[in-house]
Each structure stands twice: as C-alpha cells, then as structure tokens.
Image (cartoon, rainbow, N blue to C red; front, top):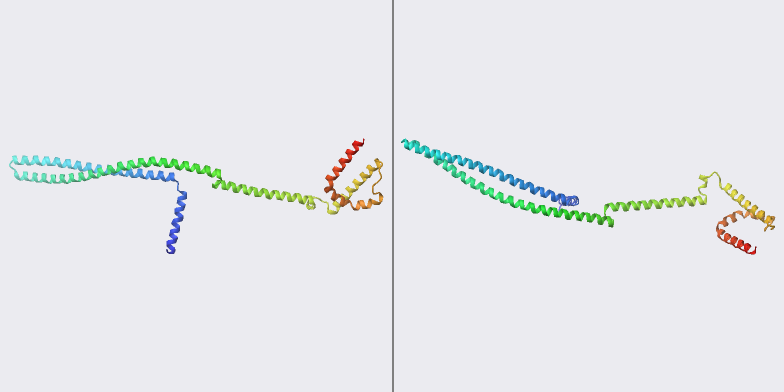
Length: 277
C-alpha cells in the first residue's frame, strides 16, 4: 500500500469514526423515513403523469374513431351519388385513421401495463414505509431508553464526561485546600518562633530578651513577697540573685515543658493544706 493510499485510508477511517460519534440514530431513522416518503411521492407523481399521458392518447383515439365514422358516411354518400372516386378517397382516409387508432391502442396498452407496474410498486413501497415507520418508532424508543439508562449509569458510576469534570474539580479543590492548610500551618510556626516578628513588630531580638528577663524578675519579686507574707525565708538568698537572673532564660524555656507537672504538684500541695486545716 502506497503512501497516498494509506493516507486516504487513514483519513476515511478518521472521518468514519467522527461520523459514528456524532451520528444520532433517531435523526438517521427520521431522515431515512423522509427519504422513503419522498420516493413514494415521486412514484405517485410518475403514476399521475403516466395516467395523464394515457388519457391524452385515449382522447386522440376517440377523435380518430369519430373520423373513421365520418369517412365511412362520406364513402356511402359518394357511392349513392355515383362518385366512386370520392368514395375511394374517403375509404383511404378511413384506413389511415384506423391504422393510427391501432397504433394508439398499442401505446395505450403499454402505458396501462407501465401504470399497473407503478401502482404495484407504489403499494409495495407504501407497505414498506408503514412497516419501517413502526420499526422506526420502536427503535427510537429503545435508543432513547438505552441513552437515558447510560446517562444514569454514568452519573452513578462517575464514568461520564460531566462526572469526570466534577471529579477533577474536587481534586483541584482538595489540592488547593491542602496547600492553604500547609501555608497556614507554616505561618503559625513562623509566628510562634518569632521569625515573623521583625516584619510585624518594631521590637528587635534584644528588646524581646530584655522583656523576658523583666518578666522573670517580676515573678521572682512576687515570689519573695509571698514568702515574706508567710514568714518564709528566701530559698536561695541574696547570693543566688545573680544566678537567678542568669538562669532566667533557662527557666523560662523549660517552664513550657514542665507546666503539667508543676500544675499537678501545686494541686497536691493545696489538697494537703486543706486536709491539715
């Protein structure tokens, strides 16, 4: 197979596949039905034209028959008048007319046969059209039912083009949601670590550290006040003040990890105090 033949074959295959996908059986059946009705109408028109032609020949035949009768009377009259020459001419015309009548009868007979054949064809074609019409409606009903069932099945199973688009839209939404959740988590983490404070706050790292030390000193001062009110001496004394200030960062960093244990110990102390009272 040459290149041109292969190219032509591929093109015809593609066109045929495209037509198969775009062809609607209901429309095809309706079109075929209309084509058959047009053919029936042409047959009826042919029968009407043939019948008209036959009637014209029959009318011409009747006129010739009238002329035959007239020439026959003319010949009789000429014989009565002893004009055999005129009688002979009249009889010759009569003979010509009778020959024409015989030809017309043959033509009329042929037209009648053709007309009968066309009428028979028309009857058969009309029966075929009625049968096709019944089958067409049945096929259209079956196709529409199958098409509706296919649409429902596609909707249920998600195999249709629309459901595929919906599935893709859900996947895209899920992906964007995950991206947004990851971004939100990343921003929260950066905010907790202080990485975003430089852009959100005017304080630098030194000021933040000084604020934390000041907060720790306030806690120690409040603790000393509680000890004084309760008549307790300072656990570390004045010698440990510097160490307390130095270790403030460590204490503040570890406080978040020991909060549950501290809370539990404080609750136990409160319970013991309540029992002793």
